[in-house]
Amino acid sequence: MSRYLFLAYRMTQGYGVSVAVANIAKSLMRSGHQVTVGCLEADGHYGGLDVRQVGPTAASVTRLFAEAGCDCVIAHTTPFFEVLPLLDPAIRRWVWEYGDPTPAFFPVDGAERLRIKEAKVRTCYPAVSGVIAISHFVRRDIQWPAASVVHIGCDHVPDLGPKGARDFDSDRSARLKVGTLMRLGPGEANYKGNLLFSAIAAKTTAQKIPARFSVMGRGAAKDAAFFDAKGIETRLNPPDAEKWDYLRNLDVFISPSLWEGFNLPLAEAQALGTVGVAFDTGAHPEVSPFIVSSVDEIVALLGRLALDRDLLTRHSLLSYRFVRSRFSWETCTAEFMRLAGANGKLSGPLRAAAPGRSRFGVSGSRVEQFLAAVRFGGLRYAMTRLSGYLARRIRRG
Image 1 (cartoon, rainbow, N blue to C red):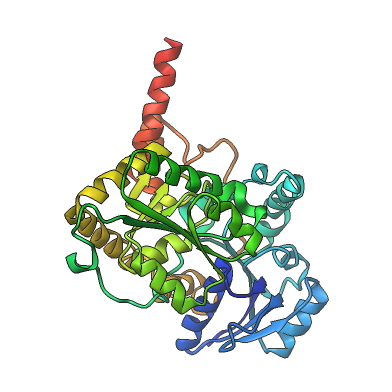
Image 2: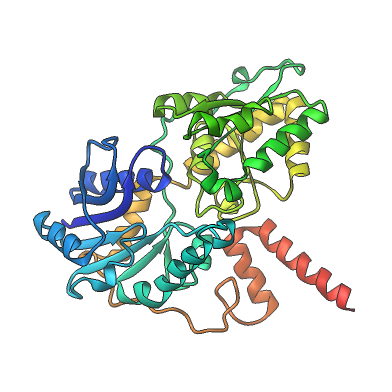
């Protein structure tokens, strides 16, 4: 059996990468492997794991690697990606890539984020045994087509079964319970869609659709004031048990995010039987069957669901089955072990594809690119790309 050293910036409650690292580690441990997690920050939330603090230097990582008796290093975040090329080449090294939000969303440190993103392609990915991306979108976004896609799981969420008609209020005058889950601080507000969620609530109210909006997330009281002022209920810093109750009791979960490498809260809500809706951005087409392209589309959908509780029940079941049949930690780790082979090592470092390939990772005709788009983002996504192309051709005459 293998002995893995995982590396991540933090192992603290409220962060998706921490959830993924913990559940991948637990799944590997159930299969008899040993896992040590090295990080810069820890809050004790993941007490069932061997979590140790380590500095982002080759010397510190090498020392922990030896102390824990590991035979493979897997980095999940910066700044440990940057450490991998500095380690002894004899050490087996992997990148588990969750993606980086578009630097343009961060006016303060966008240039530095872009530098980090580009440096990984130049120095990190070519130096390791393998690169794993958590979605097809991330594989495209990191510009490393040779990466292998391994979706993360969502079955750490209690399986309460699909919702039935009794879980929804049949009274059409009753308000639809609509909510979201996000970190509330200003740092990520530009891409997490704070303003968009408030716009959805305002437009829904203006159209007299009976709905009640709420937000749950991590942040300070001052962060919640933005939503409170707009009549949106805010719940701060919940424990996991409260989070599961919140997501289960919603009728509709909306992710207003404009960039996601996967979107774990969206998957978690659906795993609890709640309809999950998201914009057609990032990895959302891979994570939910209900994808929209505008605030107006979301509001129209809420209007239909508020009036037709049978439709709400059917959509709820579809959401539940969609994620429960696709995203499990056991499948995630089994796929990793399949890629790694018996000894956890591929035949050699992966290399980037030759320049000139299309955004879908293939070259050739529009037909080939269309079929690739279907594989990566689904038929709706592909049709959107094709219709955009045809519209441009028509405008040009």
